[in-house]
Structures are given as structure tokens and as C-alpha cells.
Length: 456
Image 1: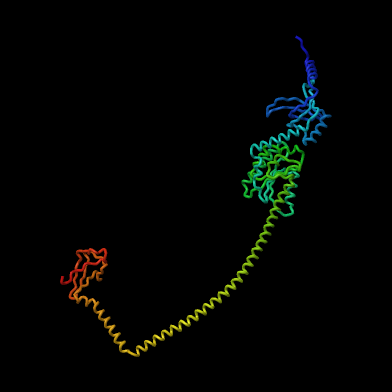
Image 2 (image 1 turned 180 degrees about the vertical axis):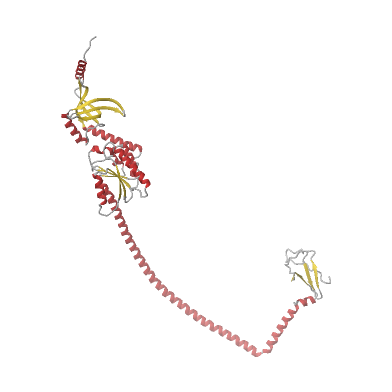
């Protein structure tokens, strides 16, 4: 059996690869692992995967003389260093060494591809937020007119935090703000989770405290672009978009714009700009109050002037009315007084004439007047004697009593009642046995049947 040594096999592989492959290839891969040796060489594992599934892996090397230039150039273009997890487009040369095996020699890296990948990833996050329907949620919250109770998410050692506090507390208007810091990492792999934890703490305190927060402020000073990658993550952006308090962002420099800036209620360029925004909002409100106060004073003065003029007119009109009314009443009283005088005089004159007439009549025939009055009294006496009960009884009539009272036509009697009948000669006591009503009893006044007189 023919055989070859391992070295000879590796040499044949190397010869075949050299003859069959192109001098270089542009390859898209992700940096899996990376380290820089003491000699300045950069050793990498280039990988390709789908989610957590690894499809391919190969060793790669950037020699020190190339790494110094490529690394600095890549960072100047993308704002970040070569690092694990970064997807790159790189020009490689396939090498096979009889001792170290197959590897790639990196000749060049396309920094623009990495920029495009970052932008693509950022756009994918934005599209997902829009698809989930949460992108505009925080912007729809009502920001208080004068936010004064502020929850701040920042690193406690960040220079941007100090600028924010100094600007806010040293405002020239003397406005007072209550600021509570919630510590979080603002860069690195753990930054996104740290910011989310701070949001959870703010929500818990906001629900428990009587004095709730007006807004949340996320601030971070400027830095490399890669340091702001945590603000482009889907999880942190989704939490901020759905947070129940308005979120104001002040991240990086003026040129920086992260996904967190896009979903926040209000985006300011820097931490100092956030403080100025809060101060200006209070100043504008105070100015609006001053303007309202000025307008209220102006309107009040106008109303008072109008009412004063109206009162003066009413006073003048009232004086004229009172004078006119007094004149009319005085004239009326004068007329009534004159009428009373004339009426009294005529009435006295009439009574005087009557008295004079009576006096003349009495003087002429006083005896005739006396006789007439005597005859009138005699007639009245005769009439009284005729209706006297004793005289009525003497004429043969009787009077019937019940319970000591004469029976009236409207009296109501019942059998068994004790009846007293009085005549001129005697008084009879009897008991009522039967009541016989006349035919026209319903039409006339009810009458009690008369008992037979003493002759009947």
C-alpha cells in the first residue's frame, strides 16, 4: 500500500489550495473571539451563525504591521473598535500551514459595511417598535406644564449629570426642583439591562409615594459612537416607549440621535439642554401667568370704570327721578288736601242743613211726632204678645219638646224617644212608637208628625 507522510499531505493540500483559490476574497463574517498578542498581532475567530446556531468557523490573523493601521482607521470611520460580536466585511487571503492548518490572513476591512450594518440593525429596531404599535406611546403622554419632581437615570460619576444638576439648581429665576437619582450603567454590555432596572425602580416608587414624579430624565454625556449602542437596543427602547411617565432624553452630543431619543416624549441634545428645557418651561409658564395677571388687572380696571360711570349715571338719573316724583307727589297731596277740605266743607254744610230741617220740623209739630212714635211702639207690643208662647197655647195650640228642646222640622227622631207635649191646661209625657214620613219628605224639610192635641 502506497502511503505519504502527514507533512507531505499538508504540502499537497497547500499546493492544491494555492493553485485553485483566488488570491483574496471579500468575506462577510462576525468576530467571534478576538485577542491582541504581546507581539501586536491580532488573533480572531470568524464565525457565521443564525441565532444561536453556528454554521461556520475559521481562525484569522491580522499581523501587527497591518493591525495598527486597520484598527485605527476602522475606529475613525465607525466610532468604535474592532470587537467580538461585530459584523464585518473583510478581505482575506486563504493560508494553509503544514503545522497550524487552515487560516485566513486579513488584508483589509470595509468600514462602510459595518456602518451600514449598524444602521440596518438600528432600522430593524425602529421597524419592530412601529410594528408593535409602541413607537409613539410615550409622546402621547401629557407633560406637566411645570415639571418639578424629576427622576433622573444616569451614572452618578457622569460629567453630564453634574452639568444637569448645576444648571437646574443654579437657575436665575430661583425655581426649585426635586431631583432623585436612579443609578445605572450608561455604556457597555450591561448598560441596557441596568437602565431597564432603573425604570422599574422609578415605577415602583412612583406608585408608592404620595408625591409622584412629573417626568423621567435620561442623561449621558458625549463619547464614542459605540458607547451609545445601548440606547439603540430594542428592549430599552420598548420600555421607555411604554413607560407611564413622560421621558426626556439628553444623550451624547448634538450630532447623536439614538432610538431612545426617537421614542422618548421629548428629545434634547445634551444634559445641559434638558435642564434649560425644564427651566424655560417654568419661565414660560410664569410669563404666561404674569400676562394673565396683567390682562386681568386691565380688564378689572375697565370693568370698574364702566361700572363707576354706570353708577354715576344711575345716581344722576335717580336724583332727577326722586325730585320729579317728589314734585308729582306734592302736587297730588295738594290736590287731595284741597279735595278733602272742599268735601268736608260740603258734608258739614249738608249735615247742617239736615239738622236745620229736623229742627224746623220738631219745632213745628213735636206732639205729632210723639203720637206717631207711641203708635209704632204699641204695634210692636201687640206683635210680641201674639208670638208669646203662652198666648199661642191659649189659642189651642201645643208645643212638643225632645230632651228639653222644641222639635224643629229638621230634627232627627227615633222610636223610643221621650216626648213632652205642653198645652195651656196640662203637660203630657209620651214615648215615640212610630214615625210616618209624608210623601214629600224628600222634597221638603223633614218634619216630625205632630201628636194629637188634647182634643184629638
